[in-house]
Image 1 (cartoon, helix red, strand yellow):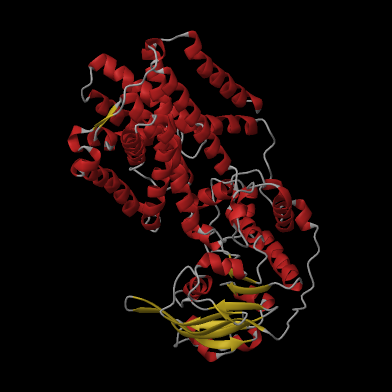
Image 2 (cartoon, rainbow, N blue to C red):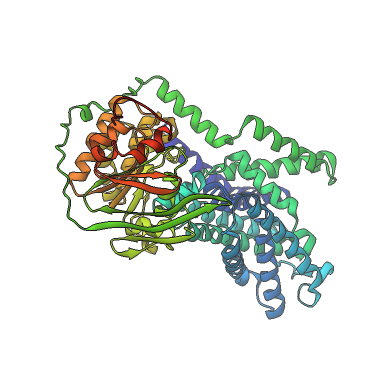
Length: 595
């Protein structure tokens, strides 16, 4: 499919939508279509916080009620035109979303879903019981519109169409910015997103606010169209479920999927009402549709079509060789002369972390000299990865100090430590599988600024730098592929490039050669040496002891959460405490064990 074709279809559809009321004044047709616009708009709003960010909200419909009540109350008390207060309804919905987000965006998983459901019911109870303001179950009656009979639905039609266009434009803009890239990274792996410098709380809060503003404005328009609102109608949990189903059917995470899904769900609802009356049959139909979507279209309609078209294009092209880029194999190995400065870059003092009765890290102390390649080794269960998580900020220590270049950082969140110059890779590679390789490498944020959020996610100098780093690790030819399609070794190389985008002073590598083929190990070692010559400092957890002996100096050995030895590899391999930790206290050999 040519790139201009989807845009052409959207343009034609918009022209038809704008011109239809001028050709036909059928009130019923306009009523059905503006309800389609409304459902699509709600689904687009939900998609920003749930499709992009991955936080499933079942309370999005509550913001429609807030906008409706705000607009109605202001219009009734001021006796001014309802239209003046439609934007105010959006602002109030956004403010409520911000206040709610200060609490809910610190939650994850089922806790977040439960809180959003509670939002709908609590809002309904408040509206029912605050009779002096909302009228309780008697509701509020708005002034009747003064439009002519032939045009009675036309203003609502055009205003909701305009709001839908604006909401889609906002959604598309968010998706292509740094904010959108950060939201998708949070959806794919929130802890990893934080590890590369994304301030997850701020990103999620902004998404929650953006998801509510146009929904609140639509609530004001909807209230005027109905001319009557009550708590049961405005805070109906089924409405929230419908908009979620619309986004899932069309394709969550895509820009146009929620629009398509909104039209389909509203037309299905209208058809069910026409065929079976206004009973509960449509609930059964929606349940069946949801089951069908989960079983047969888990990605949704639009992403499934996009995936099929992409596979069709790739089917006729030559398969990309899964080996390393040939340019890397021609790159000469870097001579290894550690540029030690004598300055301590990282210092760990009496670090402790326990899980229940298990002391994972128990009084660990060591330091990393600037310009060194320091190894942290030990048998399985010795606490190496826990120490990494404490240093990088994935865990908070129970006691102890962590100093980076003389500054204590043990109480700073992980994204702040990334901004200060600590980058890491993971034992099990944690790229963002639904993002392309280039997007993965551009995603890290070496600093935070509000202006940066609005910048294009993949463009300019950052994209150029990302391509250079991909070329450096031998993955330039894979920039356009989805990260989830790469082999384990290729993902490890991309993750190194991703870490380098932070321009870190200290790089933590957690078993970088685990599960990697020998050619990739060789190239990885060469790249580490080259980076070290350029001034980068490394702390490496590794089980490949011959590689440690070849690459690292000094070596820190852990056992049972404590440091038991430290020094050059030649000294460590002859240390009896180290041999006991690895081989057991009863080992007995005739010759010394070599690394």
